[in-house]
Length: 373
Image 1 (spheres, rainbow, N blue to C red):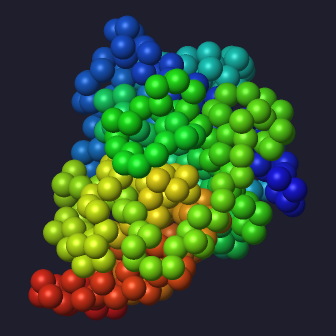
Image 2: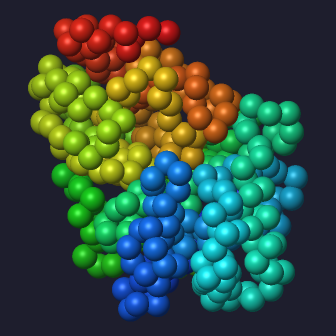
């Protein structure tokens, strides 16, 4: 790929490869009894205030990505999902995180000590894209789909670079997703070869997929291919293929999502994935090209690390992403995307039809309150 972000792309791909290795080592340690495997205990997992599990991999990957990319781009800002608050209170977990980073990165001096590790993790919690400060901001989701990760199902590592709160670069590692995945892709659709893949994109320069492992320039790795702009070929609802998260999350209105698909005569659920980043990935790969998400409550908002960058993958194959009101997703709104409500993503030529189906469905179900702005 010939783009002005070649250096950033090479650094991010190298970093996400090591991050994927960290995730695999964390799983292997849990498998062999090196860490406790159940969320809520031991050193493999514990539970945050919002009841989502946090693993060794979440902390270790955020620390590694931040330290590595900050060394390469010291003037940039960094935003990540995790806080080190609970890590600071758990010496055994803290020691394990430091050890797995050193082992996977092959650099015992990457962090001075455990306090340095925690400080690096927390440095990603103080900045928001809307704040005065660096024009360029990296956004990380160290493990998207933590619940499925613990079950050894689909998960992703998300790296985005924003410039002026605009997506310019995306690098996503999917350690269990085949680069040749076909619909329907579910959380249990694990790559039988064990290779996994990396998807990456630069705005205006297309989206690509390559094997997870291997060195060299991004576009020189054997097996790398540019993804076709498959969404441009869709001219009617008959060409739509859905990806959703069916009956697994309390945040969305499942019945509305199903009704929208039925109104458009789109098989439902189609691809069915818990994590948002894997959903964006399968849309880039062409296993799906439509997703709708309406939250149950008007004051529920998406989080930036679940979408920034990963959305760009779909946009670079011809997709259009808006909220339920048809507004562009505003990544300057902060860690929570409070300027938007829900998501409607589809090929550009039929996006308006999907959006109208969402509005019609909400009105038919007496949920006009969710259309208020």
